[in-house]
Length: 224
Image (cartoon, rainbow, N blue to C red):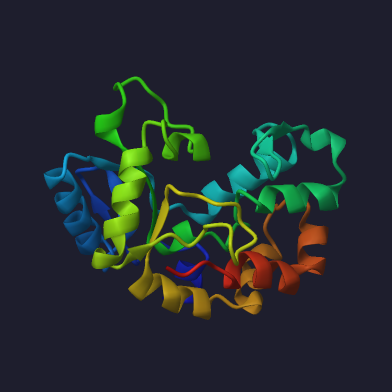
């Protein structure tokens, strides 16, 4: 991937999947569909609630949390008031759950957030909380199946709360053969070039600590 693809500013590496509706890296789409067919055979219906996400979308998520328009969570997953935090504290809080624009693994088209469409009523809106993926949550059975089978298709969970600064995300799976190359290629310099002219809230604090933030929240992940 080139720098524009790595930072979500280009989508030339992405293909659309009509069923289930999603967008993935052209080399990750086939493996995901193979994983899904195996899950369907076992009674699950893995549905991507998030797949490719571009720079602009990630920027909107970041700024919405920074200015208090979107919910912000603490390390325990409880809501906190962004307005009660200093700018540096807001940056630290956001990064526990959301990536910097330009640094999201979703930019690569290799990462998907999965729920089980068979486990809930059609009107149910997934919250992507740890409780949903642990017993007796609706997606606990899918989480167990994915833990046992995802690696057969090249997928793993990069955020398990061991090495990465990101909080555990049992819904988040990554296609390792492409994502690992992208992770190694996304340097602090490439990330800085994507951010320096962007209307990023808290940018002064981010850029002042970019090497540190990159090391903790981008370079460090949890391997299977």
